[in-house]
Structures are given as C-alpha cells and as structure tokens.
Length: 178
Image (tube, rainbow, N blue to C red; front, side, top):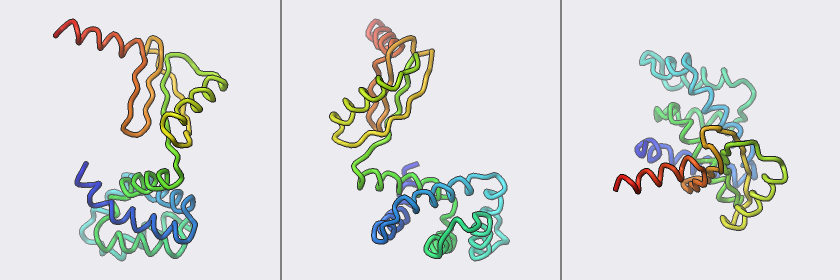
C-alpha cells in the first residue's frame, strides 16, 4: 500500500498543481474519480494488464470508454500515466488528489457511524463541534450500525473517536485480560 502511494504521489501532485493553476479542482476531482472507477472494472483491468497492447492503445481505449468526460488536459494525463504503466494506480492517484484538494479547501470528510439514526439537528450540532475541534469545514456522512449497541464512532482521516458501547466493552474486556 505504501509503495502504491509512493508511485501515485507524483501524478496526484502534478494533477493537483495543474488543476489549481486553472482553478479546476472540482472538475479534476470528478475526472479522476471517474478514471479510478473505470480502472477498477474487471474488463478494463484485463485490458490494462494485456501485454500485447501498447501504452498508446491502452490510453486510447481508456479515453474512449470515458467518452467526452475528459478534456484535452485530462486526456494528456491519461496518456502520460499509460506511457509510464500507471493506469492501474488511478484509484490511489484520485484518493491523493482528493486529500490535497481537501487540504487546500480546509475541509475534511467525516464518517459518523451510530447505533441509531441521527436527525438533522444532531448531525448539524456534531458537525459544528467537529469543525471547531479539527479547525476545518466538516462534511458529515452519517451511517447506522446496530452492532454498536449505543454511541457513535467518528472517523476523520486517521483520527478515530470510538464512543460506542461496543468499543467501551472491548476496552473493558482488554483491561480485564491484562
């Protein structure tokens, strides 16, 4: 995983700098998201691994599949990635690009998993508190998991706050074992 990130980082940075220079962060994020999804398709995976195809053929096929979703700069990006045999890294490139974009925009995606559905007022209050704690604009994504028994689990990048009953029981069991 770390090796994939190392290989993908220069491409993500180049795409980010180009998008930032042309004030097209949202467009490039969408384009890279589409490219990542296309590269994950089983048929596309077989095509990308086909040794008989040249990098130009792979890039042309990839661009053809994506249709008119790619502008000239995005098509050039796909060609460069294909020439360097990096099309399979598109999901990692897309993820890194989105991290750079979020850093630039001072925002963060936060996943909140709760035992019961949170109403809009609770979500707004939680987003406000997290925004103050993280010093960023928070985009909250709520989900339910009855296995938590009660409480919430909050994930924001590498930060995980486990306030669930299941988490507390697991801590208690670990303490009793030691």
